[in-house]
Image (cartoon, rainbow, N blue to C red; front, side, top):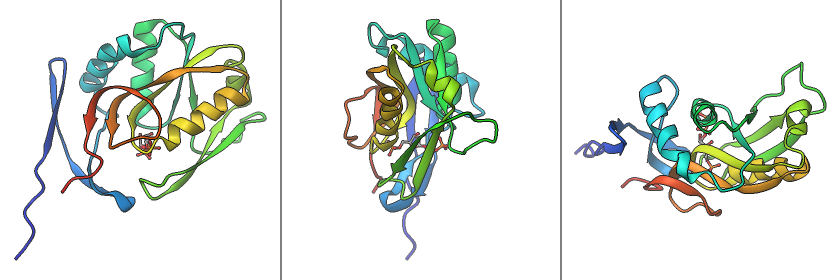
Length: 182
Ligand SMILES: O=P(O)(O)OC[C@H]1O[C@H](OP(=O)(O)OP(=O)(O)O)[C@H](O)[C@@H]1O
C-alpha cells in the first residue's frame, strides 16, 4: 500500500494566499517550502506585513542570499532603511570579507557565509535588524548576528516572514509553520 499524498499547507499574507509545496529537507523529514524568489506578489505582501516587526531604533537591515534577499529588498524600500546582504560563496572581488560557518542541524547541510569588508563596514556603530524569509533552527540568524558584532554593530532583533518549528532565538514572525510534517 502506498503512503497517502502529503496534505498541502495553505498560508495567507494580506490578500495573498499560497499553497506551500512539501519537500524533504535533511534530517527534518518533510517540511513546507516557502519561496519568495519568482513571486513578487507574495514577496511584496510579506514585506508590507513585516514593517511593524522592525524593532524600534533599527538603523540598518542585514540579510543573506538567496530566498530572503527579495524580501529584505522590499522591506528596505518600504521602510527607508538601508540593507546589507551576506553571501554563501566567496566572490573574487571581496575585500577582507568576514566569514561565519553555519553548522545547520535542521537542513542537514553546513554552510559558510561571507560578508564583504566594505559591507561589513556599514554595520559599524549601527543598530542592525536581521531579516530572513524563514527561521528554522536559528543557526543562520546566529551567524548573521556574529557578523554584526564582529563588525562593531549591535543586534536590534530578528524578524522573519515565517518561524518554522522551534528556533533557538527569539524571532518576530508573521506566521508559524510546523517544523516537520507528518
Ligand atoms: O534557521 P536555519 O535552520 O538556519 O534555516 C533558515 C534558513 O534556511 C533557508 O535557507 P536555505 O538553506 O534553503 O537557502 P536559500 O535561501 O539559499 O535557498 C532559509 O532561507 C533560511 O535562510
